[in-house]
Image 1 (tube, rainbow, N blue to C red):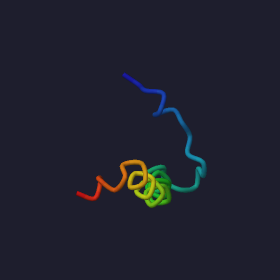
Image 2 (spheres, rainbow, N blue to C red):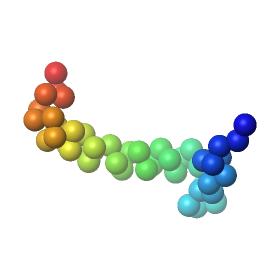
Image 3 (cartoon, rainbow, N blue to C red):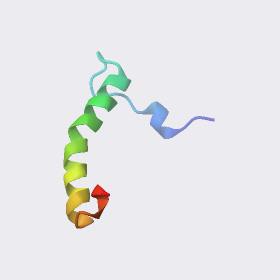
Length: 46
């Protein structure tokens, strides 16, 4: 069985897809954490 995600080409074909995905998540994580804290009114800290 193949999934559509397996057919998606990486943005930079010269770099491994895993490296690019990891970089994407590392860039998004701080913003996600901040928004999670705001939207949960700080309850996510417990």
